[in-house]
Amino acid sequence: MNEQELYNFVFNDGKEYTDFYFNKRRNKVITYSKQINNNTIALVGCLNITLFSNKESYNGVLITGVCTSPELRGKGIMQELLGKVIEDLKINENDFILLSPVNDVYYKKYGFESLVKCDKITLNYKKNCEYIVKTAKKVDFNLLYDIYMNIATKFNSYQVINKNIILDIFDEYELADTPIQIIYKNNTPFGWFTIEDKNVTHAIVEDIKILNNIAMLDGYTCYELNKNGHKDLFQIKYLNEKIKQLETNTTYILNKY
Image 1 (cartoon, rainbow, N blue to C red):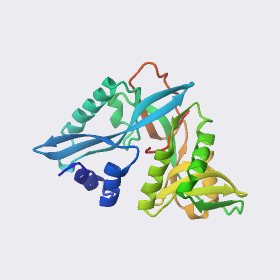
Image 2 (image 1 turned 90 degrees about the vertical axis):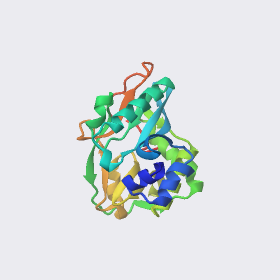
Image 3 (image 1 turned 90 degrees about the horizontal axis):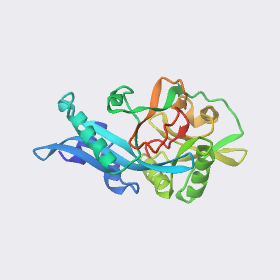
Image 4 (image 1 turned 60 degrees about the vertical axis):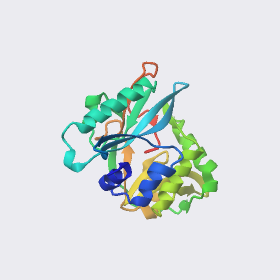
């Protein structure tokens, strides 16, 4: 089994998306793997990410696509691989590592701590004719970027994004036939979102409750930022003392990118 086969076997994303993830993203995934007899048994993906905080830019990595062959779990394989990844990223002078944990406790033994906390909520549609949505097109890049920056810069720290990141989102959600949707209020654009399997996966809005005004999202789930929330949306491990410790829920991150 090679890297792509293991990834698709564990996450069941399909061959088309797996090919996009490994080969066609503009913001390339760098993979670390563990092999036995030329057979891939564990994977860790890394994406370059930049945070802007206290008038400084810091370069780090977002960990993604962490997986181990099901029959080999619980044997310390991922612990060994993650240790190698963390050490390598530190040697290469990254300032931090981010990840979005499935299990909030697991990564804390590696020195990760809560950065963004949230609660999962279900949206309930409330009819409001002021709000409409329109499917975004790639020519809307500047509009999507401006909306993101208008919201992100209200936070003490935020992820720096560029055209390639937004185009990667376009391509990913077009594969799933769920393109980016732009929210308009009284014909003025002020937010955008993506969906997957009855979940809102990106919500670029100032207040998540605005999504209750969108009919197509009735019954969907999403994450609401909450400093005292029950779930860690993102955790961080600091690799460099020059980046000052960030307070919980003062950082805005575009999920998965």
